[in-house]
Image (cartoon, rainbow, N blue to C red; front, side, top):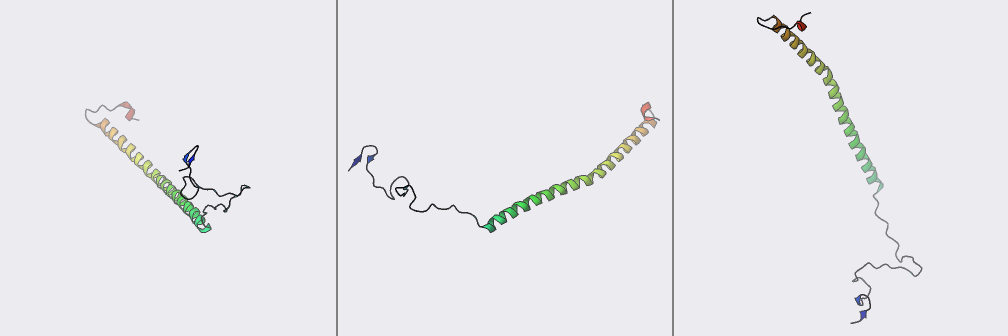
Length: 109
């Protein structure tokens, strides 16, 4: 067995070595051309953009629907408030006319 002075037993470079083997020429160029990373086809990119646009349009439509429902409830809430005020005034008027009622002066005009 041959010993290397820094790492223990000498190893032969090759597929069974621990690290990757980079094949370079003496002037620093790679022997094999570097691999180009995978890029998605144009149709896939267009479909991704279309999905994002569709999701955003759906969210905007839901927000507008919620706003429309809220705006439709405003007249109903005002009407319910007016009815409640009228019932309160009527009950206060009846309490002022009842026997033994305390009927404050703020109810009379």
